Image (cartoon, rainbow, N blue to C red; front, side, top):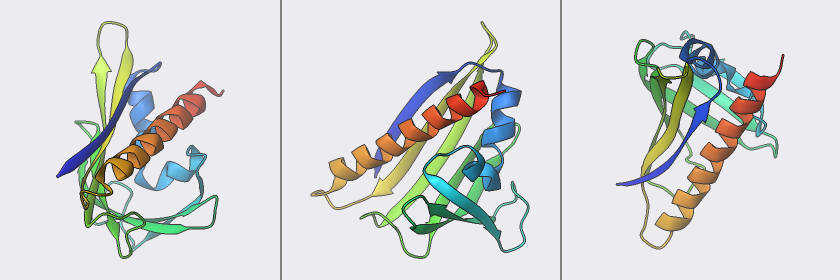
Length: 146
């Protein structure tokens, strides 16, 4: 199993950050890479089994299923449903937030555990880390907007 990882500090308190990140269906509101996010299956945003279908700005469609959700612990995990858009045999992504008590800001980590052939593993890891970097950068810009 390999892990792609990115973390950062967000300039807001954890409740404000979680209100955005914790909305499983709300990602298209703040991720620049996405055009739309549609809920499938009739589940609530934080309910296990919830499926979101995202359409990227280049027209690709990806479905992700919520496999773990901890509102109190400020984290959730998801996996791809159906066709996997990367050369991996499995993938589980996780977004996790922690309060930084000293200054009232938030620590966020976004990571993915995946299986991939050794010939593509490092390239896939880099791809995921670039995506997490983009996601968190978009989140920072969203949090800074009035």
